[in-house]
Amino acid sequence: MGDAHHVCDVLVVGAGPAGLAAAWRAAQSRLRVTVVDDNPAAGGQIWRGGPPEAQVWLERIRGVDVEVVSGARVFGQRAPRMLVAETATGVCELNYASVVLATGARERFLPFPGWTLPNVMGAGGLQALVKTGLPIEGKRIVVAGSGPLLLAVAAYLRGHGADVLLIAEQASSVQLARFAVGLFSKRSQAFDLKRQLRNVPYRSGCWIVAAHGSEKLEAVTLVRGGKRWQVACDYLACGFHLVPNVELAELLGCEIERGSVRVDEFQQTTVSNVYSAGETTGIGGLELSLVEGEIAGLAAAGKHEAARELFRVRAKQRKFAELLNRTFALRVELKQLVTPETIVCRCEDVTFARLRAHDSWRGAKLQTRCGMGPCQGRVCGGAVEFLFGWRAESVRPPVLPVRVDSLNIIEGN
Amino acid sequence: MPETVTLVVDGVSVEMPAGSMVAAAILKTGVHAFRRSVSGEPRGPLCGMGICFECRVTIDGEQHCRSCQTVCRSGMDVRTDG
Image (tube, rainbow over the protein chains, first blue to last red):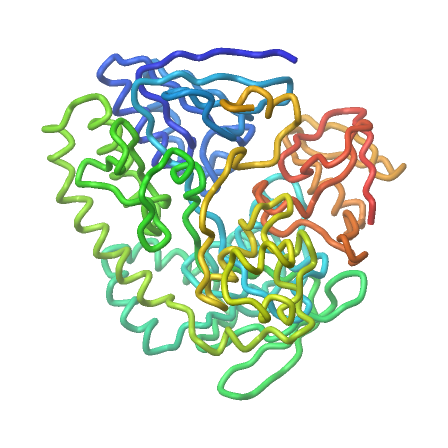
């Protein structure tokens, strides 16, 4: 086992837009900055594969003295101001004075009959696979769920030769019309998407009710305005907007508010020297993530006045974020998709009927093992919260499954 | 021309662009069920970003590797359990 030790002034967890922006700003103050990320390359989920729009930020990082540790998953805290991460060959210790948590978000998955079939994937999930080598030319794909990600994914898949049959957005046309007004400031982006998605039906107030197949997906059933119909397809790319990744923040004792890490105006969490930026502090998109990252990086470097100058930009982006989240709020009908036999927790194959017998996440967990498998509730957590209103009660180390020899180095083991 | 790597998935050779992930290689060979769930259902990748653990396979003898987070290397021996 190769172990490594990194000592820095500012540690940034997550190399997506918020993390890169934070690292760049902190490094401008000539501090020792380390970025740790679990993916093989920097960029996060949105910039996976280094698209052109990411280049300006990747260039900025190359232009300053920042140490990037890729392929390392932070799983716990060994001592105060020391996180530990697992790499392919061992464990690395990350010692810091301040830390910026830019752990991003994941897709929200909602259970419906057939959602566990192979080739039913997240919208971002399928896109990630295509970005990392999956050929999809000529494949029939239905994109469904909610949020602006659906459009971006559909355009991307189409650009790679997929036959995108339909985009099903659960939000109503009334909600979407309000959003379209808010999009005015981003109209060039919106225009590009519209062009790329020419002739692809975009249906609002439309959602998946079931996926069909035996060994893999063969067709889906959709509903719109009370009318149901079936569509044969090779892949279903389905995600219901995003959920912040707050597990590490919780482990460090940061307060969580409505599912996001609570921060002050300088992006500092309720724990001193722990900052957070980007989707971790609430879903708001790329531009908000970048400016929050910059503010966090400046604040972590003690440059509060410079950080303050960015507050106006952030305020504007936050308004857009609020509109975004109102627009794509999930409709109650989606709670009715599960049948008693539908699996909710995929790791432990716990059905809706078994969960329904309990009145809290804790009770359900103890009796059914819901949320206790390898994903540790990251997939079913968002669904359980939506279906039952339960929220996970506490996070325990490790925040991700790790090798036994990695576990031994966490404090208290 | 981008560089490619060749790996073996369930005994079948597959060529992938360098930097591809193992999950993409598995799907390219036509295998969709990567593993069986605790109750025996077929499962494949869901999140594509390392959180759901549905894409676990055996790589070079090591079990439970997340194929969506593992970069393809030439000569890699990948076994699914679907």
